[in-house]
Image 1: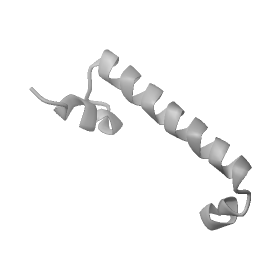
Image 2 (image 1 turned 90 degrees about the horizontal axis):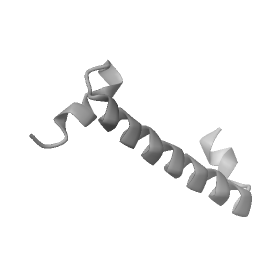
Image 3 (image 1 turned 120 degrees about the vertical axis):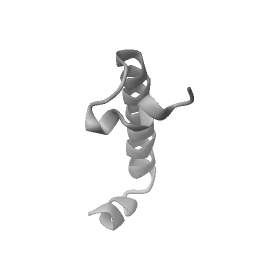
Length: 48
């Protein structure tokens, strides 16, 4: 078994621990993205 359950998490088919790991990773990526947007405010226009 590789990360198949993780990949299926958006369809609701996953193990709880796997979802928690994904949420933590997404939150970390979002925090980094928000930090980058503070450094480069013009980047937010590209995302809008």
